[in-house]
Length: 532
Image 1 (cartoon, rainbow, N blue to C red):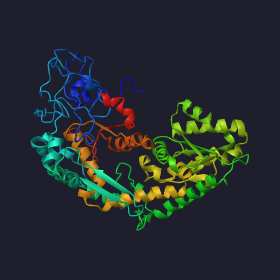
Image 2: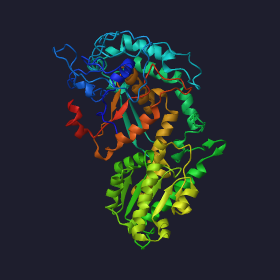
Image 3: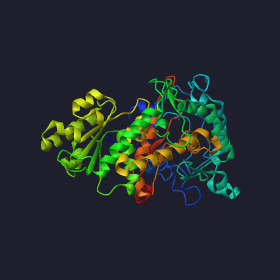
């Protein structure tokens, strides 16, 4: 674990020399300090939080005191920029609500800071066709147009002025979605963001020039868009069960029969556990389910079971163990009975070190009471594709649930990894969950970009992260049932976008690929980090 506090040092790490030079006393915060809180009003719920530890610092000379003497630290998630890269020209302090005036492009003789990374530096190579997308994003014509728009107009947008100038702003900058299979309704209100119609048009043009539509269609077609591993990316196939669902092929084979076979196996198992038909070695029904996994095998199922707790069956509890620290498993085992507990071991290869360590500890605990190795088959199931390792562990092959190499871990809750969800809320509710996801997949695939909820949220993220320099994006659910959503989305966003090279292997130097995702339930936050 890191010794530094969360979010510390990320602003300083954008300066390459600061990451390389020896520690030196520094006066003033440089770029990234945050002015006093804005007053309440339009735009508060739509802005991105930019605060960090550096928000505590007063600008040098503002009150005649020297502040913040500890040296900057290298950023663990951003590339280091060489000192030879030309400095970005300083901008006027057009938007004091988001950040203070940028420092001079020349480094202070008393500061270890190097010049701010350039956003307008020329791309290292000209852009290739959109499908290849081997050029850096800043080389695209749409990016340059967006940069010019930010410099001349975008950076000066003020939320109150935007609403005062257009009484129809909410209608223009909001989209409502209704699922065809579920009837579920979602409203995306992005009117309280620092964009106007020109901004949105340029952001969507960037998405088109970057090849978003082409890559999206390739994903749905089962093409191997995961070029580094030569795999398709087909979590959409896992929930392709709504009305109008079409076959999805990988290497010329329709994967849907296999997907439906595993879903039927999950349904049958969930019904047996919930009805009491599945009994342990002493003939008692299952009362507790313990899921042992890590990463996507834990975060997704935890989030959904917490969010859908009102649909849970009374008397059936689900627990999750992910930390290899033995206390996590030990605390769960204190609350369960080996005679009435079903363990789910979630590991595609059945070789994941952390998961297998906990699985073997759980089996040792179980056998201390059950004694007979043969009893393991009644109390352990596997979510895996490694039949040999699963059967050697003592799990019956009939209790092994398959998933495929085109299922990414962070999207796996829709697959067999969702078995604890299916058991907890019931197979009918789990199927409704899949159909809701299918409705959104259809929307993402068919809706025009101007009305496409995932696309709009994505381009807004690019706008804030790369043009306003927002390195932090807070997700603040006020519904307690959603309290694990920030952690789930943190993996989904940061693991997906946390890349230091392009698809062609070129190091990314002149733009950022994503922000730091974090968050807590809103009411707790109001009495904590909202205060900063």
